[in-house]
Amino acid sequence: MSENPLLAPVHGITLEDYSAACAKIGSGLSETAIAKALGVELPVWEEANLLWPERMKQDATYHIITLFGQYFGDADQHPKLGNLKPELSAGGSGNIEKIKADKDFYQELEVARQVAYDYGHDGAQWIADQYGISIGDFQIAAAKWSEQVHQDIQTDYEGYNQTQAAYRKKYEQQFADAQGGNVADDIDF
Figure 1 (cartoon, helix red, strand yellow):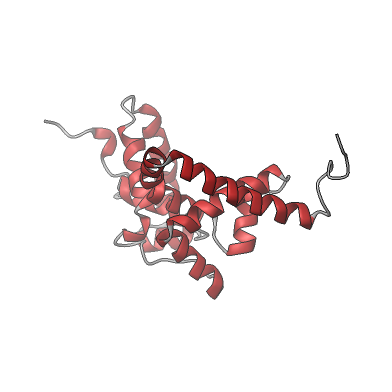
Figure 2 (spheres, one colour):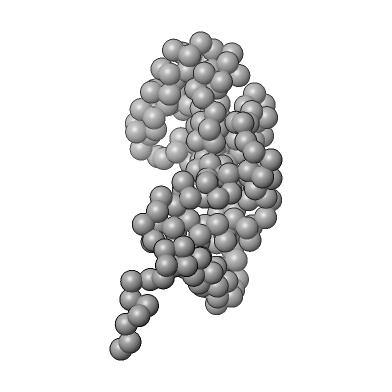
């Protein structure tokens, strides 16, 4: 059985390295910090950052993309990058750990992010501003909780929907209050 040549490291940067690096960049780390942690010069990292997506495009089996998602979700366990963290406030750091450890907190913020979008805000930026959780850290949590959330939906679809609806109502009220109400609040039918 031969190895897939598309999985060969790019200048010593494995798919696992690349995936974890993408997660960490999404969490606010610089490419310079990533290159340093991987032990390569910045131009080497930049070329790998161009070549890995090209390999993903070439992979008709989607195996590379699947592995990328798994490694992205496990970025905090990466031997060289796992402990790298951007500068955060104490509250932001606590919320990042909480979203990765508390599925209910993740699900609540998932709804809050969507409600923010519904009210015309950048939901990802709203989560970053309110909770100190970057889009990268949010996506790491999403990758972690995805399978469990799907199992919860299959196990108790009605309960899942009720919980989501309660979160939605809470954040719709919060956004409506912040803007002085909704447009149609004073219209009676």
